[in-house]
Amino acid sequence: SWIRLIRAPDRGGRLVGAGVVEAFNLGLAALRHQDASYLCKLDADLVLPPTYFELLITYFDADPRLGIACGRIREGADDQSYLLRHEPEMVFGAAKFYRRACFEAIGGLEPSIGWDGIDCYQAMRRGWRTATLPDPALEILHLRRMGTSHKNILHGCSRRGRGLRYNRSHPLWVIASATYRMFDRPYGVAGLCVLWGYIDATIRQTP
Image 1 (tube, rainbow, N blue to C red):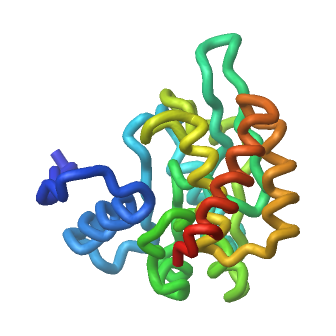
Image 2 (cartoon, rainbow, N blue to C red; image 1 turned 180 degrees about the horizontal axis):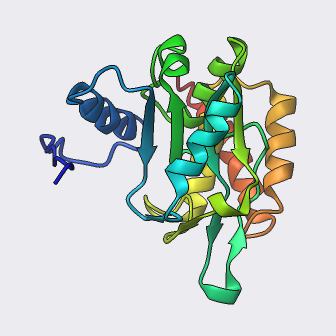
């Protein structure tokens, strides 16, 4: 009874990255309680533990500098499931939980590919801590593989590379990031697609 459905006009096509932020901002503008202490952005294909938000808020209460956080994400079914690899200070875009003061300090979300990395960078620049928390009681099940919502996983990996271009990442960092992603599934190919996405965006001189 406390959930309201808000419909957005059909823009006529998928807008990866920017469309997520557009939808989030639409919901934010419709909040009845604009003074809420926390904001959360969730994908629709997640299964959360029953005490997820209660436990998550205890972490925020214990650390006044914690600005953005989420639990670890698990993909796959039953005994075939696995935890997604991640950098400890980065927060999965599928389940962003913001302290309102941090969200306002970073000026909201960047309407682009890579928005879910930019918010963490901006928060850290301003002295906030960001984290994917390793507590097993906060583990989230993701029902669809990350990066496959638009076309396929290879397209999703190349999109990550285009995001690195948008972030103005140094080429050496791009190589390091692509090497790190070599160990994501599909092994080897994922990292090459990240590298190709960056190179392609550089050749095309995208913003």
